[in-house]
Amino acid sequence: MHTKTIKELSTLLHAKQITSVELTQHFLDRAQASTHNAFLHIDPALSLAQAAAADARFADGSAGPLTGIPIAHKDIFVTQNLRATAGSKMLGNYTSPFDATVVEQFAAAGMVTLGKLNCDEFAMGSSNENSAFGAVLNPWDTTAIPGGSSGGSAAAIAARLAPAATATDTGGSIRQPAAFCGVTGIKPTYGRVSRYGMIAFASSLDQGGPMAQSAEDCAMLLGEMVGFDARDATSLTAEQGNIREDFTRELNEPLTGLRIGVPKEYFGEGLAADVEQAVRAALDEFVKLGATLVDISLPKTSLSIPVYYIIAPAEASSNLSRFDGVRYGHRAAEYTDLADMYKKSRAQGFGPEVQRRILVGTYVLCHGYYDAYYVQAQKIRRLIADDFQAAFADQCDVIMGPVAPTVAWDLGAKTNDPVANYLADIFTLSTSLAGLPGMSVPCGFGQGEKNARRPVGLQIIGNYFAEAKLLNIAHQYQQVTDWHARTPAGI
Image (spheres, rainbow, N blue to C red):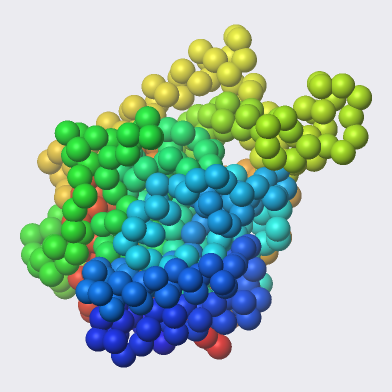
């Protein structure tokens, strides 16, 4: 049962060949028995009550396509009945008085919450080793990282602990873990998915999206996630194009005549040979499907790392200033005065990577440095976005390349080298800075005794609001390949 797609499970539920309670219990058993540390919080009674409510909808004829399907939420989304920790000691015992909009939307569709998923602390990281609750293990190779920050989401899908998961992407945190765990994930256009109830890291970059086995599954999920939310100041309006839509509507469109831009900057120094081989093989499949490859250039790609690691920490410094031990979150047990309480609570509550980014962000926002660093980074950010628009204007319809320069690395391999972690995001950061939609699709494995067990992801990038096109392209590829359907040993 756990190897079936959302579409297949939905068909079984509507045919009454299985109940949501039975399906939910099956996944609860798997999640509770798992040793991958993907789940942080599970409440079986709550999940089974929601499943029973879903079964009632089937009985009265009000069930929709996603009714009764279990879903797990990244612990960056607040939930009323489950803890919302953001993977941090700072929020270790926090339970929200309300649900995030994304959680509300899936509940309204009749989906069943399985639990909350592990993530890098406050979504800061590329390996899911920064969680205060321990690292997540990659189901394909438990000695490897699963990617981050949505490593718990990717691992849960790969290990078939849940058929669907929510995730967030600030600089690549949907696409990179999806690639490392061999699952499908999509980051929509910035502002399409509400950030209300998403614990903030970098407000101009954070964006929610789904992870699942296939592009078809992601299309079903994304259709419930998008739409204007008046409670989110960064939410795009319907007049701007942010409308609820059926992303499955174009899943059978042929790819004849599709122009695929292949950036030379994505295939240069630093790209591992086995990753390039898998991505090139995927591009060849698209040619067989009727597409044309076009060489393009995105010359500002190399600037995306310094730009991102100025803008994102600056916004993190501002957003995380609210965690001070006064209103909610961790408070130091012993302190001498208010200032001492602030210092000790934040020093104890935040992990090393979060502290590092707060310090960097505070520095670049200081008087005398703001214009030299933050303002200049925002100007280059616009130039990075212009590179993409120049390519989409007359050269290509979509852009493809690797998600990451290498397959997943060993646990602990880059723990003491944060810059090496940052460099792993080179191919995903520019898309996030530009606010464009992008997705990761499984396209093969690495080479060699170790890397042969570690997946490779193909990145597909589109222009604004091109999610339906990206999902169709990925779906067509998945009709002629089976990388997305493969499961780790023992699953």
